[in-house]
Amino acid sequence: MQVLEIYQSKQGEGLWTGKYSVFVRMLGCPLRCRYCDTPYARSDSFDPENSSIGADLSPDELAGRVLLLELPHVVLTGGEPMLSPEIVELTKLLKDFDNVITIETSGIIDRPVICDLMSISPKLRNALPPNASLQEYSRPDIVQQLILRYEYQLKFVADTPDDLPEIAEYLTQLQGVRADRVLIMPQAVDTETMHRKSDWIIPFCEEHGYRYCPRMQIVWYGNKRRT
Image 1 (cartoon, rainbow, N blue to C red):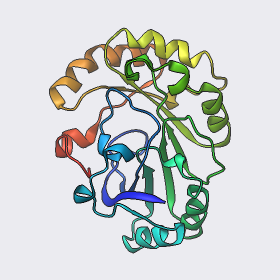
Image 2 (cartoon, rainbow, N blue to C red):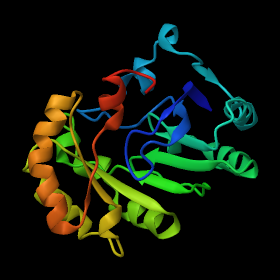
Image 3 (tube, helix red, strand yellow):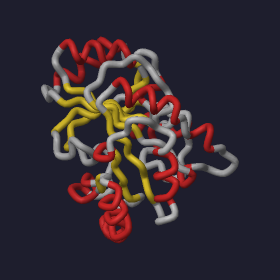
């Protein structure tokens, strides 16, 4: 498995905000989202000098490094962690040691992993780079299968108020979605922008029963890597 870095921090987004966790950041992603906050995790942007690991590890080796940090919560993130087929074996190994596993994914790849929270970030038109199609970036058919099999959260990034109707339209393509598992997060890399956008996101969430999802890692640490 191509692993960029392993570190400890507090979960800053979603239902388990505040949980001290081991974060495993995988290298590689098939998408090129305009607002990507981890472009260094793309294979074509990899810089060995800025990586604490940057190596191919077997699932056994990776699980061993995670277990040495002795935290029960583990977040598999990226990049796109579902890109590697070996994530299936990794999740089995981590669960053998009673880890609580979150997988942060764009929802475009389905694998039979074991996880306690499938954190899915479906992409909207605001994510598309030039000349990309929404069909490449959005797979509601795969998202539907994931939410049927796992505990989940759907985390949408809103950049402008025009994104909100698209979120509502996207959700009509899914069945059985719980409103309290829909999280709307402002596209922001600083607290001022995040608070400004909350002025129109929060009323939308209150109207529909969704959750407002601030990026607390920015509040706690600033816009820094490994947080």
